[in-house]
Length: 463
View 1 (cartoon, rainbow, N blue to C red):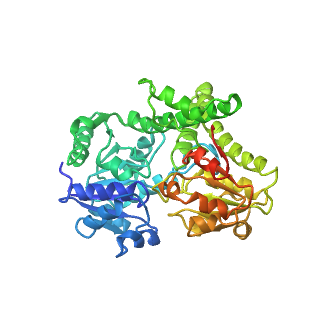
View 2: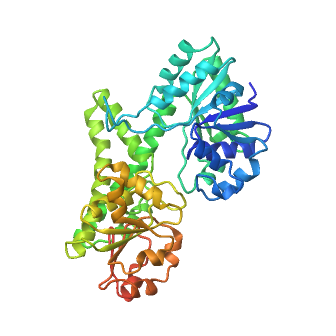
View 3: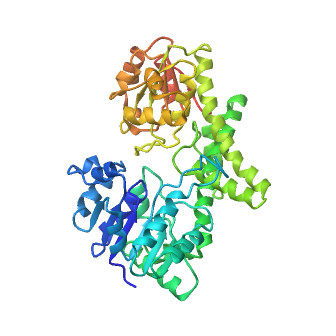
């Protein structure tokens, strides 16, 4: 089967970039990204390609090249489904906030709604691809819905999880470590796998395209994120021990990272991991383990989350403790709000939780992030439901300039490792701060010795 038309349901951080790359590399395939969010689609279609809703280095140029040629963004979901040979499902699967599995299980209501809409609209055989991160055996539920509520057409269900790191998503898509495709072992299932493999083979060497069964593919995504998050929590746990013993966590990380069996990646101590995937996927893994009675397995993975939450609270507590046990009415400048550099994604960012803890102590938070708006900052705090939006706005203000945010501040907390923060004139910043001045580097971004020379009391996680 040769794919000529692709539809992706969901124009978010996965669907948008992935479809842009497919459209660029496969000019003979028409790629349509559909979403019911009219504002988001309008931004993807903005005449100024720099205004697209997702910031990733290099993405706007790729969208600009393919958009209008064979890449389209639309709110007409039914039309996109009807015309496609292959449909990616790339909608949100948040952690449940209600009912059984509350706080751990994935909420699959959007996945089910997509399946029912596909079943209702489809008039010819289609390949359905899970792109969202899903619990094991979700494909089984999707197939049941499609087979029992459709128009008698045949569907093949594939699992094709994304392994993108935000901030490097374009490079990850152009040069992936692997592309994983899970499907049925039946002849029809293998033909569907081959059809999707042929799409990726336009630019990905076939030896990097792995075939598995559906269940292995679904579990591999959860496991990959769990392993990466585990490494972050492990080095963060050691950072606290280093502070007590006088060891330098950066030196420890370098020493163990040179072991070829361990490697150096994800061994940078920090205020904690964020993003939409790590916590959600580990909690999902915990829930699945508990549902099978594997309580020891569940406890093991849940500790990764416990350590991450502890690190964020510890960072906020260190700020309060250093500022003479009170931050009431003191200005704390936050450099960075996104969960990592080179993205405008703020989901589960450590900055949200550190800010919330400090506002609980009546601190005044001044935020500067080059890609995050005041509206988004307040929306993130409102989501915690600790205070209402009017109260949050009294304590948290965003600035369009780092120097303005730091002006007259009692302390600075570096929460995102944006490269531009390394280039700031720290002498100038120090001169305009309250004295004594403090900087808390939650991302180990700056040269501590340099800052000490200009008068800061410098504290970083693990130093």
